[in-house]
Length: 202
Image (cartoon, rainbow, N blue to C red; front, side):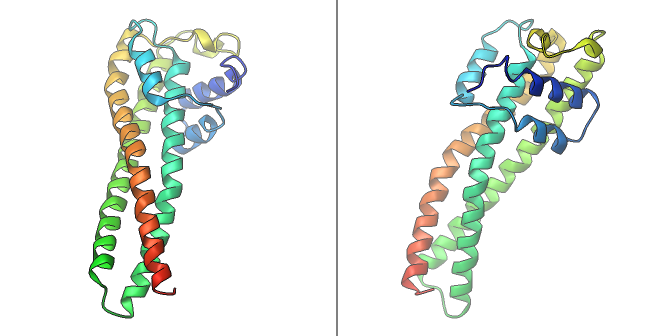
């Protein structure tokens, strides 16, 4: 992973976009340029929470959002594959009566697809809430206009801001846990769907 110092231009751009009340999509687009390497969300969360409320740094919070985003994107690819398999199996069973295995697979895929979509929606709300709170924090800083690549690493949230973003971190933690748990399950369902599709000669 590139060092935090090397990525300071990206962190600074994210801060400026948040301060300018840019759209969530725009902020996430810039944020996606951050290289997270093998950074794990659970480890990063522990590191953030272990600090005093005067030492929660901006870069760690943004990096955590990037880790969540990376996990979401990874699951999103599997989600798209699952949707494609569901559509294929649905087409097969529309031409004849579905057998027990096909009925069970379609129902299970539906359940997990809906669960993933629900988690994506929760993630969206967490992103919006986090950027809103950070924007408020930046608005209250007299030195916001003086932020630069050389000092962005010294930007710590205020204790008040920490209190407001802490509950949002819990939402991110829930998202991470679900993303990590859901991906292998969905992968297994995709393999089962492939067997069914192959058996059907489709």
